[in-house]
Length: 430
Ligand code: ADP
Image (cartoon, rainbow, N blue to C red; front, side, top):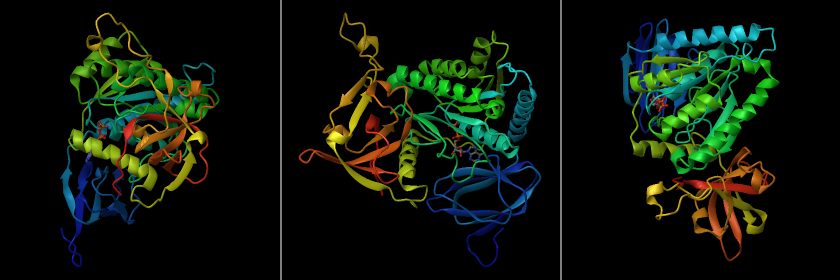
């Protein structure tokens, strides 16, 4: 009911195992727990403390034992739901937790038994994959584990700019507003919002990332025992399906969680039947997951880029730098979208090498407004096998003066002069 004194203050009483589902409007929303305990996607809210949620955020405040929530602001929608799949999700967590303890207790050097669960979350778009991933990671971190989060979704990246694949150790429950921490992330830049643009490159980068993590695990039994939670993209047909199998195989996944699609579940169960060490588990999609149309998805990609340079609520200001053309080298990988064979002239059999690294003319008009990754590579031929330190955004190309101006999240010269271009552009709307 309404609280006297403030027009937009509202209290909601939640029964045990129910949730308050909220879509924030174009104005931020303040919220706090006044009684009991509640969590947002696995991360517990401290009592009494107001938190501000940014415009358009969609989330649920869930309580295991009952809570009273106070909201200050006008929402797009808010309603209470007592039917959620949360019990089944926490049961998965309990099983993973047992496996982590087993792995940690394993005294042998046997790589098999000292390896914690490697969980991969799959399902169509808007089935709640990212959300389940967050819960599993936050619940694990709450119990003191440091699982590794792996994000393979180039369309809606959670860690950094879209077009990337990335991994990060999760040391504490995720912040319900800020989400995944970027500071310790290992990032590879693919450069496009769909794996379709260059399937071979996507696979190559997934492989690179997996190999680096594998090496890190060797020297770190604790993170090895904590295992991984891998989020994937919602493309599950055709090549998308092949890429899922590729990821399961490349990361040696031991638990495949299938959200919201019977067909995908039964297909995966079938092909993975021969692998006795892989469990395929079907889980219900939450009725709270909000479907996003293509336009919204595109907008949220844009916001993600904006967030990288300006922060979640534009609290940061990026640095504008100008460099001479001669101080930088920009490269592109592959030759754009791969044409299907049928689209090629009769008689020709192959398209250009998808892994070829080619220099881009820096006065290329296409560079204006593009997002470029700053590679850790020392030589151009190491670009595919190198992760990136971050991103810049090209705001001006001056052909006469041979200068390029870009925004960067930190001041000073870039850690490397080798930059990677893709097809991601961003029209700054600030
Ligand atoms: P996917 O990763 O499968 O595309 P997400 O996990 O990103 O799906 O969920 C889509 C949207 O729905 C996100 O904005 C997420 O915050 C929201 N969402 C998920 N679960 C709930 C819920 N129970 N209540 C309200 N919003 C939710």
